[in-house]
Amino acid sequence: MRRWFARLAPVCVLCCMAAAGPLAVSAVGASLSPPVADCNAHGGLTRHYTVKQLQTALATMPADIKQYTSCPDVIDHQLLVQLGKLPGSGGSGSGGGSFLPVWLIVVLVLLVVGGGAFGILAARRSRMGGDDEPPAQGGE
Image 1 (tube, rainbow, N blue to C red):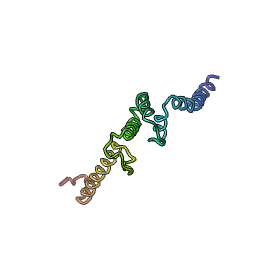
Image 2: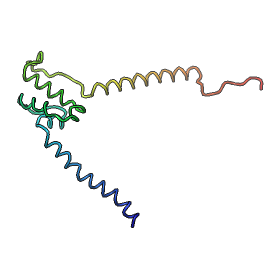
Image 3: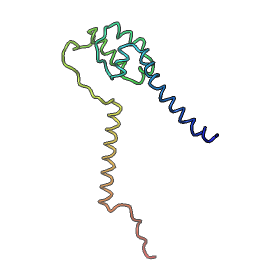
Image 4: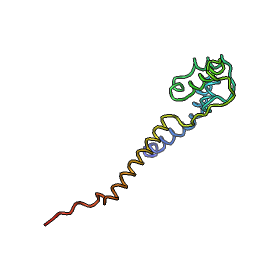
């Protein structure tokens, strides 16, 4: 009986967690202001919000969203555009930006440069005969 329970208990816990997951996500999403929920879901603002809504969103944004998403910057930028405090915000052109975070671009560049350096070292080693064989012992 104990073996049966020991095997069934983890399965029950996983089923309960899987069932509660969507409820927890919807509960968190329900407490967010509309601009924050929009930004958190889409990585940017997909609708137009009033200055008051944007200010409220910045003031009531949860700490985890402030720290781990770009939503504070996105909402603050939109607020500054609507207030006319950004230079050149009156133009109709859209700014180009990378879809990758800066830290990821830096890591990728370092990996490419490091891989190239190791490739050059390997090519030099193979041209020089390599260090795979031990040096020949003389006279014995």
